[in-house]
Length: 77
Image 1 (cartoon, helix red, strand yellow):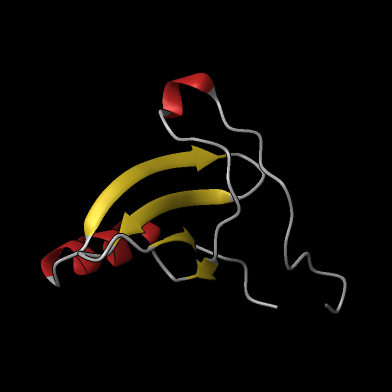
Image 2 (cartoon, rainbow, N blue to C red):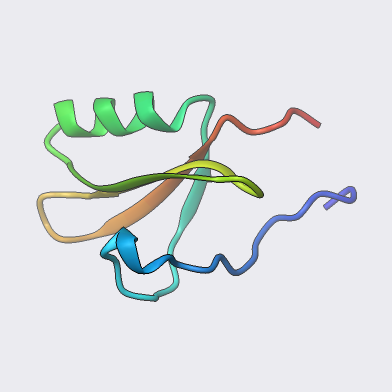
């Protein structure tokens, strides 16, 4: 969109301890803060990593088992 990537594939390092899968990813101002807020609301942090090409990413699960990934900071367009 407007020359900016809206999706893609990310190699998963062996030390991440996550299985390859498709994820819903949300761009946020601060991935770590979003993960902390999700945990305070009952979510379960799953992983957090810094990826040079994508920024900070963090996985969060909800009490029912659904999962999502947040990424941030993101560049403003």
